[in-house]
Length: 312
Image (cartoon, rainbow, N blue to C red):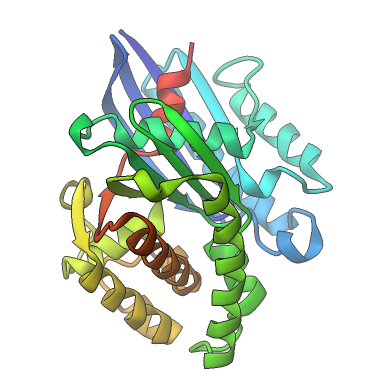
């Protein structure tokens, strides 16, 4: 048995999983998420904002302290959409090397491709599912990108669409609540991005849609009328499209204050989950039409679990 730490640094959040690994399986020791909005303004400026780097460093420093406390033996940190093409990403790498090096000498964040991100998300998400429900289409809806992955036990096809809840909100949804014109423009952007993804990933043969990451888990919590976020009840929950679309419609129409008042809503998702809901609605329409799927399976296990399983 080995104790490993996985860190996923995305556009909106940075997350930590500490787990014991034995015979290719994980036993969770600690899981945590912080909203740091690393991708703040990246779509417009092409650079990480100084404040975003400061927030990310503070969270990673706390994570490094937890790694020491739990005596992890190996660490892997990956950075995804926001870090792929920014002009000042060397500042980000230097910061991660400085913080992680105190725990694991030589450790530094890796910027992974959309293809690898998709594969890690897929393996983390389907590990506990019944193979009889395959083929699976796994969707990892992040802040800056959305990965669409098709497979059974292995990945058959994948695509990283350059759209996520933060990127869509910053690009299209400026009013509070968003106007009909803004929502229509956002749907056009999503349909174009998803159209490209679904030309690359033949979802017509899929039997089960699995959604991972914060937008998906929050939608499940709201569909279940939770007053507080309960990850155990969310993990592997099933949300029919009728309830799913009703929750999405409500979120899209709400003001930020109304979303903030929802019990299971994380404060860091308040301003961007409307954009995420638009992406989910367009995905539901496409998967219902193309594959006859009528429900979403929501998994709390995702790319973090895939990262932990990938550590040598």
